[in-house]
Length: 512
Image (tube, rainbow, N blue to C red):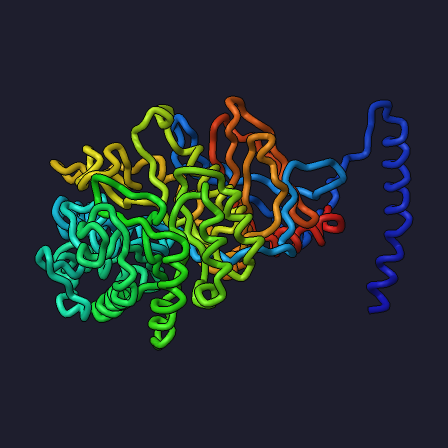
């Protein structure tokens, strides 16, 4: 070892001389530069910036719920924004979206589609996302204008009556409606069904006819029993009824299809004295929804709710969209905040005002504004109609369904209403809560926001009714994003605030 050290020391003067000579050469070289050595980068645990998912539809039908590139979320900063979302301020809990399984819709599904076609279509309608995810349904108690013929569930020969309801039966529904509803329930067992009567049996009425007339006071108890028998009969077929409305459009007397006028005082009396107590005695709860008619007469449900005997049995108010303003819903809600709000009927159609499509109207007026005015659920009218707006008995000759089933070929096409509903139903899940978002309708950029219960994700639906593109900015907590909405379009934005919060909390120290 010592010899090795001595050998090494003997070479030291030579080594030093070589280093000195090399240094002199380098320093005298006119263009010499020391080589640049790239710094060594040590990977850090920088998180990926969160993003906003986006689905878009346009009025011209060029886009129909098409997925768009993700939008990057960034720090909120101090710049003003158009829409501020506050998830700490919560409003109503959502039950969902749906359409009516009228006699006409059920008939088309059973008679114009094969079993496989019907199964596939019902899975598309009622299956979970990415399907349409309809979670509500409306049924008619007896015939409506969208039936193949008029009938009730207790018809007897003219001149006879049946106060004991011994002839009550649901036979008219056994071939089409009941099997179709059961199939839908097999896909979504949590489906919430609202049932509405268009008329009492003719023998209960002033004109002895299912079309027009009023309910005779002597049969008010029997009529309440008629509705309860319907609930029990359908439950026996495995179809639970979530809520009843006692009379469809009680302030309108049709002349071409089943209907019946029923004053506010009559409704209050029947609910308070008969229907309410009968339902309350049952183990399975069935809710009672008052009114079931247009926005233009809020004094009607206000009158019924002011009756304490009736009000204690009423769970909410049902609305239709054909006249008046959605703000009537808010007026009634403010007067009776413990009563729920639902939109139970609204139909599109091939009328003049729909010449340029109905995507914007249904997205903005029915869904965004209706929900901002406290609707927990929104149910469209017919789920399916054919190319001739039917089949139907009297009534609306131009109505459209959510889907169109060609009566000759069975081909299915999806109307604007389908996509308007889809912007909500695919993303806003039952149990979601509407949360605060800046109102922007004055800018024709209507919006409504929700937070899903399951994963905390935020859903924002925005409608640009302007004929030009509009740049919008959205902020939630300490993050924001910006997007230019195309002219006349509907957008659904979805993001998870917990991921955004985690990213925002580390964004400033995570730079390399």
